[in-house]
Length: 219
Image 1 (spheres, rainbow, N blue to C red):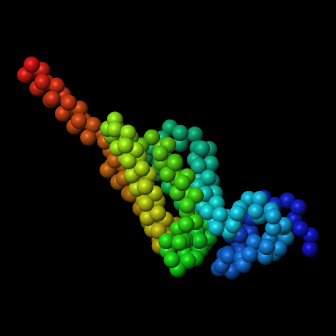
Image 2 (cartoon, one colour):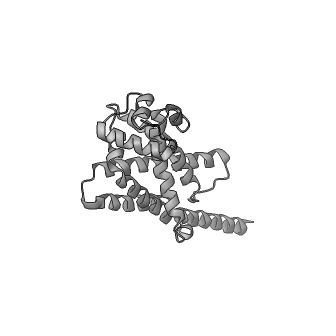
Image 3 (cartoon, rainbow, N blue to C red):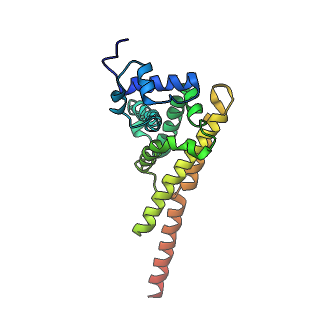
């Protein structure tokens, strides 16, 4: 049969997702996969180095589609960091829900649960960068190493929160995954409440005031 002349990365992604959902396993080889879908094997490698790389890219695509949808919303740019992250979560999980069967497969395909999360490698890189760009306010210590450690801790804790939310969503059997929506709202709001540095800043400013006044009184 004639080979397809034009093949895109999105074509390959669709073919792959359909294949694993129909067979509950990866294709045996890239050659067999390409042959089944009538395109040259080399066209697969023009986009992806392996099935593993393709799987990682799929979760990155969910992330990219989320940001694309958010950027199309004029209100999003005016949101504070809390509401931006909430918007990200709700939109991202809409993308996951639209592809739930594949996500469940991808994150349960190996008996070794840690190995399953390798497919989230690219997602982690892009998500933690997104977190660093949100402008979440932290206490500035003027100590470079401490400030860097704060930023790293923020990104890692945000990533763990996303993983926990994915696990909650995977186990959620409520209609329209309404319990996941509640989980998202409560967990994100709680995280920002914990990070709220306004009271701490006020306490520091008050301490500076007391110190200054005391110093002036004793001078």
